[in-house]
Length: 127
Image (cartoon, rainbow, N blue to C red):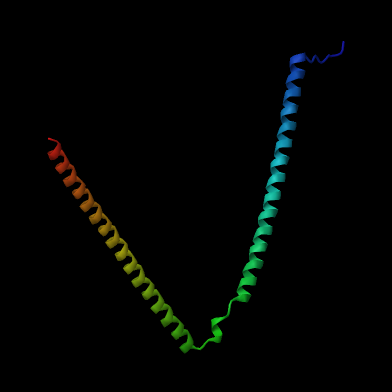
């Protein structure tokens, strides 16, 4: 009598389930690798685009090496003057804004005081 291999239905079903899980795992893995590879290629393309744009912009910029030290010193002094003027302008604008709000508040206070006075007079006349 030869030894017979007995494979039951549950063992066969278990082997099929494990095989199906392995196939699903491989499919999911390939999809993830595919997406990652596509994204990597897109990022490299974007980096190349940025490099080209940077090179193009650098070629547009007028190099300061052609300017003499006196010219750069004049440019710096004018820039410093501009920044100090901007600071003074901002300070004056802020001062004007605060004074206007104070004036508006004083006007509101006076109006409210006048209204209260009128209301008190009206109350006295009614009584």
